[in-house]
Length: 270
Image (tube, rainbow, N blue to C red):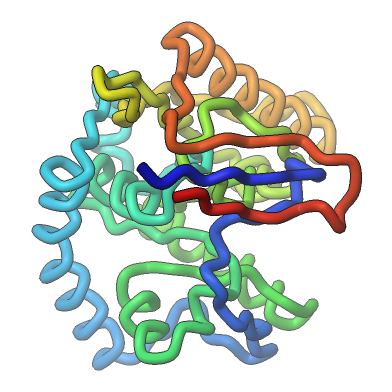
């Protein structure tokens, strides 16, 4: 059986999900939210065509189960959207799960510029709602404006504050409060989606997703203080879920802390 060892030094910045992509920067004039009728037509068409594939992939192929969906009931009649914050342990399930739980609302996923660096897929990923992080001040202005517009039109914004994928990792990594700027600015509700791994008889693991919320920013605090306070609540909730359900590390994976950046690597043992 193949085993994979991940040697890490910095849990906030080490990335084990790049897959050899030659990452390009997000262009200054990147249009995050095109307004043309043709764009909107094709985006809606591709999104609806992809929806059955997403449902089948999440529930039948990946075996995903989503618990505590009842917490989303207050959002059913809400005109504006909401945010979902998740731990980042799977490139496929993390992408599929939020559109599944938020359907029929459209979901937009904030991702690294890797998403616009994959030749032949970048346009489809845009249709599916991927928003690449900005690479400059100019693209950042367009990015923030797009999030504001999409939120106000009732869409769901999906964010992975851990930023980098650690496959099947069973703990919560430290993350910054930077990504909590948006719900604080908009006074928006957020939900926490925590992927927990359960042990199977063969020593492998299966995922169970837990929803919690809504959480709202504390507007009695300053903007920076509110970001940190909201981040701390989200982090605590994620940690609570993995601890109370004893999230299990698949026997095929191992994470090892090293003493320097130069030692960071991935080893595949057959």
